[in-house]
Image (tube, helix red, strand yellow):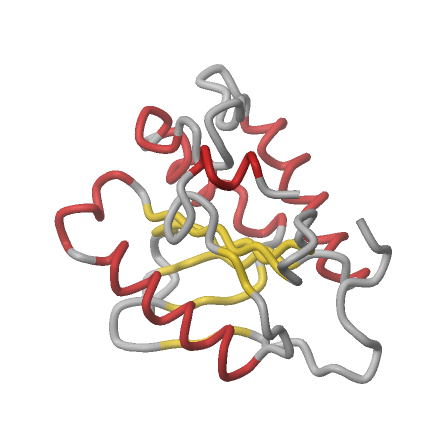
Length: 162
């Protein structure tokens, strides 16, 4: 992966907001709410990053989650990947996350992953978040070829791409 994912002169979007959620940089300040969201959705998130992904570990501790958040926060500051938390507009609850990573596939510049906590699946938030993020990435980011693995490209096809 490249050290710097986007050019220095690119203004990284701070996030976005609508009446259902607020999207902003994920940080260690979000640890308690993030941990609650992840742990309430472990079975739903299994295989989120692909069929061989071990995240999330059902035995993950709050301290391990903080370590993950530190890594995401540092990567964001270094501009090498971008993790956003999805919060209720009043910031009272973490609803999920959005990750923008440099693609390891030659035909793509970025890979976008997003999830909502299991309790939000019946509310339509997953589809709304996906549609909103897809438009946001198209309108606000500089990438021309973006992949949504596991959504627009099934995992078997994705794993066979170079």
